[in-house]
Image 1 (cartoon, rainbow, N blue to C red):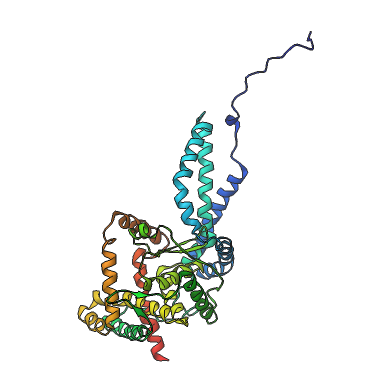
Image 2: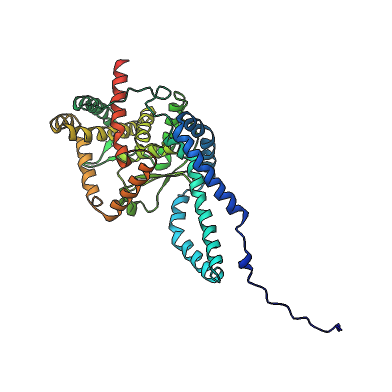
Length: 381
């Protein structure tokens, strides 16, 4: 007989985590990761599909992310990076308190974290990865350049032409006494001038899109200089970030390079060359000067390795103000030249770029092949 006041003892129930299942959102993320892997395979096998995806789906996503993050004056990606130690500490504390009662609980927590990491892989494939596998910038569908191995003489002719253009633009540039040139406006104004130049470039070429976005100066630019990184495109926030600790004459070219990444030009040599062409579209002499001088330095460096005598010959054609600027840059860079941070970042970047099917960090310098092919094409017109 049970009385109304009788209390029935509850049986012990096992911890809830023992029967916990992986959340559906995590399963969806793992499935999307697998599908993204299939997409990457298709990109590798079908360059035309990679270009189509890059110029439609990826471009739309890049515009959305850039539009969302542009109003923030600081780099959201940098803020996320700086908050990483705090976030990791909170995750560890939470795991110790809530997910250590069994091996199953630990395993489920690890799977949840892995699904969160998968978000970055998914965003990479859908927003940026296709750009590595499309048709090259030299293809007939894009710039139609006859890109081949180049001789020392061809390097010399291109370097000489660039030197002449540097000399022309330098006449309208302000230089400090035996020191750097001075950019006569703010980063914000430079940003707008580059967007205008992109508008002009995109009117001539349909493989790249034009839209408004903001170049983000990195707050920790000086520490970043020890890694030798002058700029970085953060695909998961849609931001083009630049190291503003570097000399003025490098900033427009670097910003144009990162804006090229933001518009789907993934390969480093091609982003360098698009940066050069966009700088030439500018109505501003300092931006054109930046484009000519930065590309000249790539070509001259290759010429020095191929034929030091021809390098000296073309170097002597530069105005004295530009020569002093290059000396000032060398002196500036001496404080960052040898560092553990640069060795680590260089190795990581080299590995990442090789995984994307490029020639690693060497691909930055391959812009000289494009420069020579373009110079030869223009000479025939």
